[in-house]
Image 1: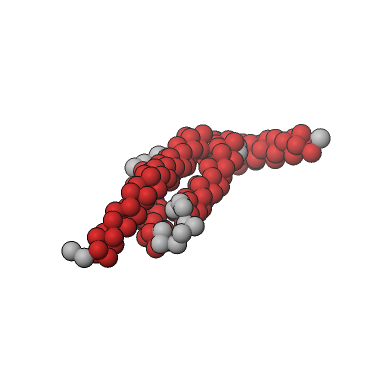
Image 2: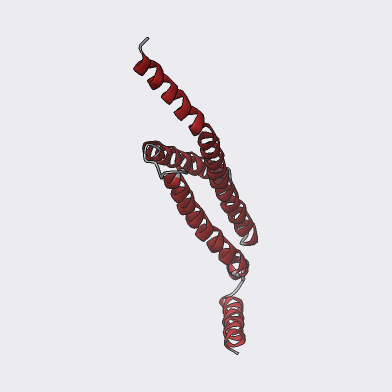
Length: 165
């Protein structure tokens, strides 16, 4: 081997050694991004189940299937972001998987919005409406149904006045 070949090989080995801590940091960041993605989707499913229970809605395995499919899709996007980050690694200042972190932020914002919507749905009195509708249907006469409807209107007015007062 000639002197330039040996120097070239030494340079490559030194470069790989210098990248070693960076690769470990990248792996850790990617692991955290994937973990946060899965945790956010799980929290969304959890609040969705709580909201469905509060509103006396039927809970089925469909929600779990949707959550699993959503997590797989999110992880695919995260993997694609990693591909972009791998290209960025050839740029000297590109120290972390910025694209993957940005995608994870997007997932967290989407799932956070969904969690807030589920919490609002849980706190709404939709379960009262379902119960009252069942009572109206059970009424023997039209007069009984009208009394229940009037009671609902009065309660709705009282809630609005209480909220504004």
